[in-house]
Each structure stands twice: as C-alpha cells, then as structure tokens.
Amino acid sequence: MKRSWALIAVTTALILCMSLIVSEAAQKQAETGQALTEADMMMMKNGAMKNMDKYMGTKEAMMQELPKAMMSKQQKQAAWGKELFSDTSLGTNGQSCASCHPGGGTTGGTVNTPMKSELTGKPYELPVPSLVGAAATFPKFKVPNDRVVSVQEMSNNCIMMFMAARPLGLDTAESQALTSYLYTLSEGDPVEPGKMPEMMKKMMESGS
Image 1: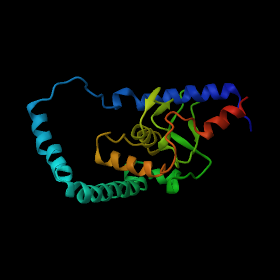
Image 2 (image 1 turned 30 degrees about the vertical axis):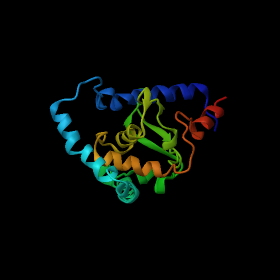
Image 3 (image 1 turned 90 degrees about the horizontal axis):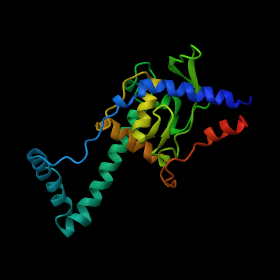
Image 4 (image 1 turned 90 degrees about the vertical axis):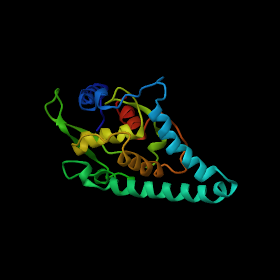
C-alpha cells in the first residue's frame, strides 16, 4: 500500500519526538583545545610510548610483532562484538541486536518502539533494515538525533528505542567491540558517508 507524503511527514515528526530519549545530554561532549596535564603526559609515556617501542621500536618488531598484534586484537575485538550482538543483557526486554538482525541481516517486516507517539498514542512502527553494508554509510544524519551520528551512536539509538535500555558509553570496551563487529558486515563495501538506505528511498518513492 502506498504511503502519502502526509504520512511521511507524520513519520518524520514522530521520530523527532523520539529524540527526547536520544538527547544531546546522553552523548559525551568532547573537550577541545585543552593543554595536556602532567597526568596526561605520564599516561602517554607509560602507555602509548611503550606500545610504540614494543611494536615499532625495531625492524623485527614491525615485521613480526606488529602484524600479529593487529590481526589477533582486531579479530578478538570483532568476535566479542559478535557475541554482544546476540546478548539480550544489553537490553531490558529480552531483545538483542540479533533479534531484528540475525547474522547482521534483517528479519524483514517492522518493529515497534517501546514508547508511544504523543501524536497517535501508539508505538511507532518502523521497517527493519539489513545491517550488511550499513556501517560503510556512516557518519550520517539521523532523524531521531537531528544531527550526524557515528555507528556507535546509531547502535545506541537501537538499544534505547528497541531494546528499552540505556545507551552504552561511547568510550566503553563494549561499545567499541560492538562497532568492530558491525564494520565487519561492511567488509569490501565502498565507504559512502551519508548514503540513504534503499529502504528509505522506496518509502519516499512510494509516496510520490
């Protein structure tokens, strides 16, 4: 059944209402232009500089230790992210990312938000997209946030709106691991920040 432009307008308004639960206050604000403290310098010396010496201090380290570390740590991170993707403990309603996106794909159909729209009094119903290739289209503008967001922030949108849980801290190991897995679903795809999903294009076309 074709959607009218009026319905699309209502759709947009409803999603904007949901920005209340994905507010700027929930996002960690970066501090820029701040001078390094003594503690910062010591952290760099005891962390980053020692790691640079370990993996890049000698030709042998760069040729042997660095490639092994890159491969093992990257694979371990993505593997943990894949586990988190199916972990219902990230939510509060028994759902996981995989509930709607088995294997990173889609169950098809639609899913309801846990919160009701102020306009209709009903949960908002959204189509379920595939996540294969999705990470390669970020950062991009998302209506619920009313700004350009990262893959990590988009994951938090889903955790809040469909898993009824608080967002993951963007600097947490869990958030970074989940993001690592999501990027493996875009392996080999061209990087196209801001690309509109085919699902959204079809919705717009059907209303013409």
